[in-house]
Image 1 (tube, rainbow, N blue to C red):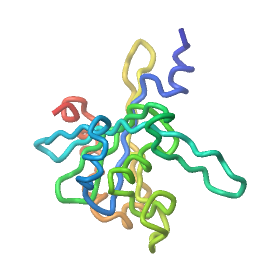
Image 2 (image 1 turned 90 degrees about the vertical axis):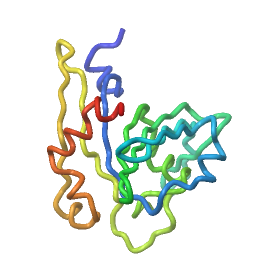
Image 3 (image 1 turned 90 degrees about the horizontal axis):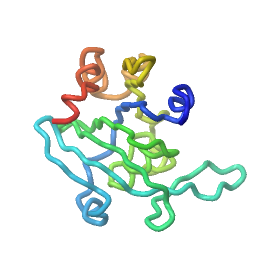
Image 4 (image 1 turned 120 degrees about the vertical axis):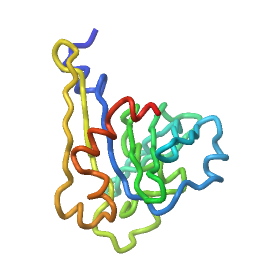
Length: 184
């Protein structure tokens, strides 16, 4: 039985919420390509996808960035929950597992890569940063009390990601991280 600190270090009992700005909406062909790995739900407040594509870290080459690929036969189980916010190109991303580059690879596989992602996106483009923000996290603390924190984006990030300032006020993030809202 792992200790609480060890469990938290490995992400057990921890919840993380990210917000990403993507290039486009989900590619329908991508969801149809892997029906057993992509579950789609319509929500009152946007479209939801649960992506369970298995991921594998490519053999690392010196002086090259670490890359991760979808590998249906040898990949490790991976699950990310995405909520697409209406007509905005903003996506709430919730990790159910914690694989390297998981959000980035899953969104790229779904045909909507993150803006500014030079590794998995549509080329370098003219962005000088990736539009992915760790917005909130929570974990079970002592006596199973849940500790939660809202992470405001650094001000340059807010000004560069259109729509992010409207999505990320503290009250909105508390609402977005509320399990009742996420279960709708």
